Amino acid sequence: MKWPAILGVIMAMSASRGARAELPANATLAVMPFANLNQDESLQWLKRGIAETMIADLRDAKRPVVERDQLDRALAELTLQGEKLSEESRAARAGRLVGAVAVVVGGYQRAGNQLRITARLVNVETGVVEQTAKVTGVLERVFSLQDQVVAQLLKLPGVKARPKPREAKKTLAAYEAYARSLQTSSDDEKLEELRRALDLDPDFHYALYDLRALESRLNRYLKKSREIYDERTQGLLATFDNVEATPYDRHMAGIQAMTALMSQMRYAALLEVATRVDATRLPDAPQAAPGVSLSAREFASYSIFLALTQLKRGDYALQAGERFLQRFPGSMYGNAVDLQMRAAIEQRHRHDESVKRAGAELEALAFEEREREREGKLSAQMARTYSFRRCSILVSGERFAEAIDACRDFRKSYGEGEDGDNLVKLAWFLTCRAFAELGRFDEANDEALRLLDAHPVWAREQSVEMIRRTWPQP
Image 1 (cartoon, one colour):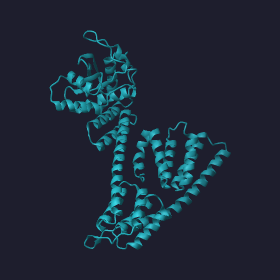
Image 2 (cartoon, helix red, strand yellow):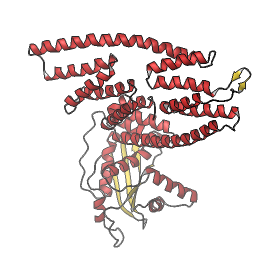
Image 3 (cartoon, helix red, strand yellow):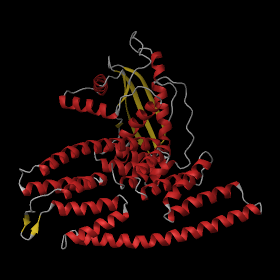
Image 4 (cartoon, helix red, strand yellow):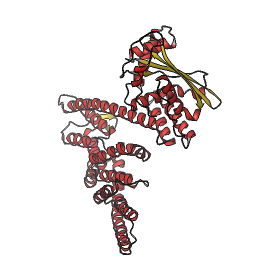
């Protein structure tokens, strides 16, 4: 829903009661939640949906518009004041609180499959209704109805009807899921509804924008949490280093510091701290319970093994695991270490088999490609397919260093062309995986972030962000 210069025309609005100063071209607009006039519970989601999609389109058009959370705070403040106000007066006062020049208020009601939307543009300084709008149409065409409302309110020329969606009901269902995400204060529920909207309609850009915004907020929360954890960890390590502290406090502080890093999957930092704890001479471990010792060095030895395993440092992890089992027989972590070591050994055997199989597949692929070329049957599309298969075979064959080069070569050669089969995106994703399997997580993370930015819908469908979160964090 892209509109022409929406707010520029506000300057042309004439006052309905006597002469008034023209509104400036960069006037800020606020959009109030729309009223559900016939209290139709099945359409309660439109209350927020209409307002928010209007806000989103104004934002896309680079026009000054008050964001939803600012307006919500202003409305909450007016509610606390308890003063009885008309709808226009309340809207005007909320608009002044958030610095808006004009406020849109309105409502909607349904009769059968017909939806009527009414709206008014209120001057925040005077509380006077400057313009009104009323449109009616089928519910599935709600976006076009919204376009018409804005055109009438802001005296725009007649807007072109939107192309009829090929699957209008699916788009409407996506709109409903998106609108429901606006009604909940739970981040988990927001994510669920936004992802459901995009599952229904991958091109539903309102949900995509909000999903990105929510993920950005979650990243800020994570950063703040990490800062608090870092400060707390430094305090725990200071206690651990304090020779005047009790043995219990020192052991407990060391264990808590390592546990905090482990819970955040910050395995490089865990390895550093655990190595430091393991090398420190501590008094004997106290009894946490009858027959159970509390040993920071035991936990540190286990943490070193775990960190090396997660960081994909296979040989060192096996050495650390064996060292742990020798030093701490009967440890509560012993069974976990034993199982992980056996799994790593089995994986090593499978790795050798995978490498051999990949070698045979690559030889067969090269032979087939040469034969087709010799016979003059190697089309450009077939050459593209062979190039991608090399990338794919090397990844599945766990020849990850070679896979990075092959997958990047494929993207370089075919990244600018038509990608209807998504092979370029898939090669990009396989590059991320290859970096991660080599333990080069910084490079894997950088590639994944670029992929998410370049192809957000496809990346979401492939759970790239969720996979990225399973890698060791910095």
